[in-house]
Image (cartoon, rainbow, N blue to C red; front, side):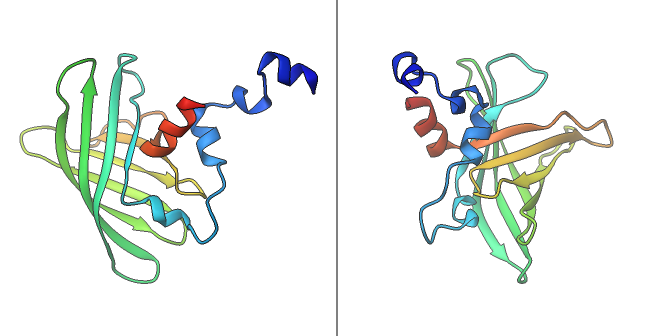
Length: 153
């Protein structure tokens, strides 16, 4: 263990940031759904290295014990440009943490995101699809405050 202390190497540093975020234990009495009304950020797959997507859930309306409706915004940013923002409507299955988001905008292909929250609620694993097109590779958005905590360590 002296090797770890002298080099700063720990096995957790080998994990991707989203994996580290998903393994952070929540405080007592803080359930996964505590993080839903937050901002989640991450890199978009297949784009420039600085292409960022943020998903911000503004409201949640529980429809039943297992289903909730969501409203919020998606924000796309690249480099120093201003973000492009779209509203979305979505749904969340509370028992499985599965999420579906449909962007609401005119004169452009409709984009849909589907995926799942991690067990602790700090990570969204998503796939995107435009119109009836192909589904993207899975990518991860991390709760913004959690990401800030992990990058400052």
